[in-house]
Length: 202
Image (cartoon, rainbow, N blue to C red; front, side, top):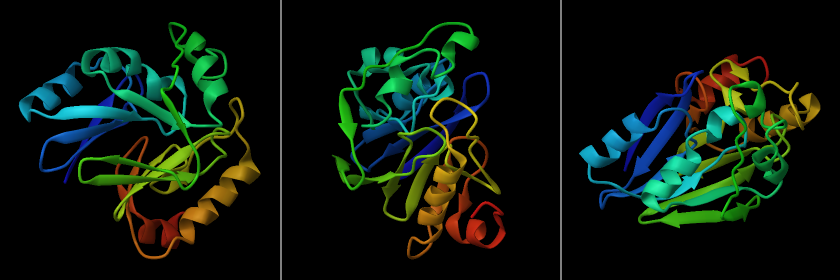
């Protein structure tokens, strides 16, 4: 399995391409100019089948429609995130240069799984940054979106955000057994053990 990080879009949102040895691939969040993503997929002859969204803010969905059209990917998002995905005011895209809406092909809930090739992504419901924010767990890796960052956590002052709710989600992550590599929506990767010891919000 390989995990590639591409910082894309106007604020450097992390787009992840996760692939197995057979070339099956999943894209997690994508914004901005998708050409670096296309180049990487072409270079390694990958076959992306799904776009997994951690949440629906503009900087995580800006390239979704273009990428979906190019590869025929299925777009997956949390069942409680539909409003953010489809309301340009709620997802803040109208304040950043143009209205964006995304209609997901599949809405998932806590405990669901998405299987692609040899990879199984387990869905963990972690609201607070938005009401439908998700993390995806793949083995000992967590793709945390804007719930958990290195040394910090996501803001809660935008539509459907809630501070007490994200604190509960951070506690849920903190209390997961074992250690994980954490791949956040922005900034460098970290580990759950580092965040347990040093992140003031956990």
